[in-house]
Amino acid sequence: MKKIFIKGLFFVVLIFIGISIDKYLNNNYEKEKNEKKLLFQEKVIPIEKIDINIATKEEFLEKGISLSKYEKIKEYIEIVGGIEKIDNLITIKGFGKKTIEILKEKFYTKRNIKRKKIYINKATEKELLYFGFTKKEIEKIKKYKKENKMVYSNLDLLKILEKDRYIQFKDYILYTKYN
Image 1 (tube, rainbow, N blue to C red):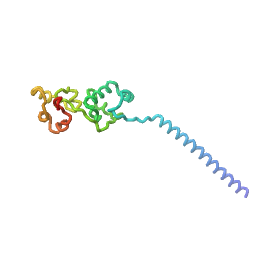
Image 2 (cartoon, rainbow, N blue to C red):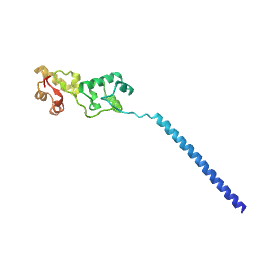
Image 3 (cartoon, rainbow, N blue to C red):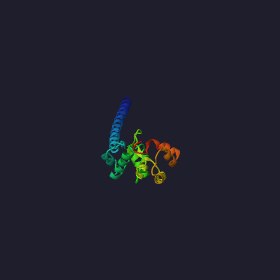
Image 4 (tube, helix red, strand yellow):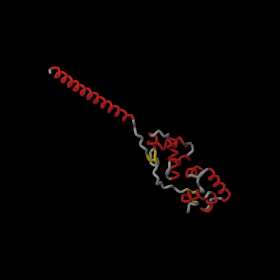
């Protein structure tokens, strides 16, 4: 009977030791897991996107965008009135697909941009490019102006552009300072 009692007591002590060891190991595991989680969270810095139309020079520089690219983007905004899609910046000289992808990672655009209007007879090639005209269309505009002195109206613009392209631009084109 004494042997059974000792075996039972020994068994209870083993269970108690096992439970204690398990709790100790679990506490250390949870502690390590939480420390690693905190360490990981400290290293991960979420990138907050900014509206490219209102971003400041400092915000561009903080995002790793060079001063010259910032100045070109601001010039585009000044000419066009705002950036509707970051993809449109491909018309800026020196901006390729890689630059556009970097900008998309760091900035967004609001879709309700009020585009400026452009005086087609006074616009530079750069301004026409920024508005979305192709180089071929710009050459046609130059040729038409050389032959006719200026583009007088929507009817003239329809002679220069394909109908779908005319529809795309018609609301943003001014022909004289008086229209």
